[in-house]
Amino acid sequence: MSRPYLVPLTEIRREQMVVNSKFITTLAPAFSIDEARAFMARIRKEFSDASHNVPVYIIGGGNTVTEYFSDDGEPAGTSGKPALAVLRGSGLGDAALVITRYFGGTLLGTGGLVKAYTESAQLVVNAVGRGQRVPVHLVLLAIPYNLLERIRLLATRHRAEILGEDFAGDITLTVQIPISDFDAFQLGLRELSAGKLHAEVIETKETIMPA
Image (cartoon, rainbow, N blue to C red):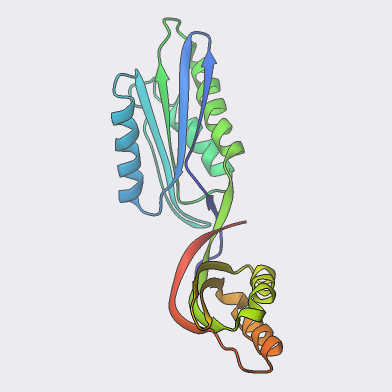
């Protein structure tokens, strides 16, 4: 498995005015080139009347990445390249951003454009929540009513998320837990129940968890 790296937790947007131009920056997680392209197309459609929609993405993380940028009609090297430098310097992978510019009638000059696009990228990079792709088990667990609260606490200690609680004769829990915490969670279940409780793995996958 590849070395862990940080990814955006959610899509976010920030705006700023520079002289008379409005800059709107949207950042989102993207786990493939196709996802990044779909995101960029959605933003271009949303802001189809803008002067420029400057796209940037980094797919992958660590030492294995695919990078892309475009200046989208701005002078070469003044928009996409500095935005990519900000994204690269953030340590985020699997991330795409589009900086939308509505030209306000005042030319910013080459240096002004570089500064505006750099700061616009920094606004979202500094604000976005960060997570990691974590391998998890999805498990089922049938428990007696009297242990529910103690097992909720046990789940919290082991970074597990209870996705569902089905109340019948017993309570059937659907739980998502990092693989690295699973053995300790099972041990905790046995200790709470004198060896009677056992979580059954029904699926293994990757998910994004807060870093």
